[in-house]
Image (tube, rainbow, N blue to C red; front, top):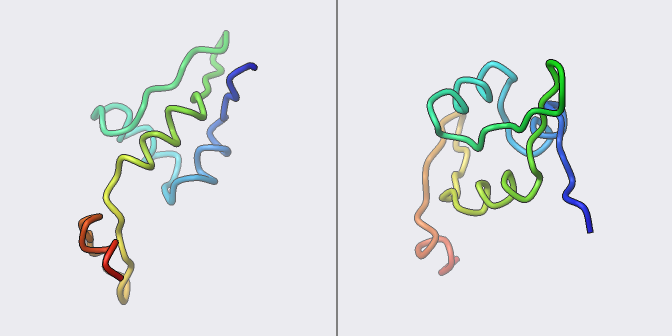
Length: 77
């Protein structure tokens, strides 16, 4: 089975960030780096993006603010 590769739009469909924010987080090593697909094209391994998402604490949006909830606390709800 081959690995699925996400383009930038595919990554944006999975995380709530602009392209600028994605690249800033990659540069700051806060998000998985893309792989080169030749020329100027890059893509992200879907498995790496999904793993990164699952490793993040949950955040709850409350009146425009983001509040991080520890996974142990959210499991009680």
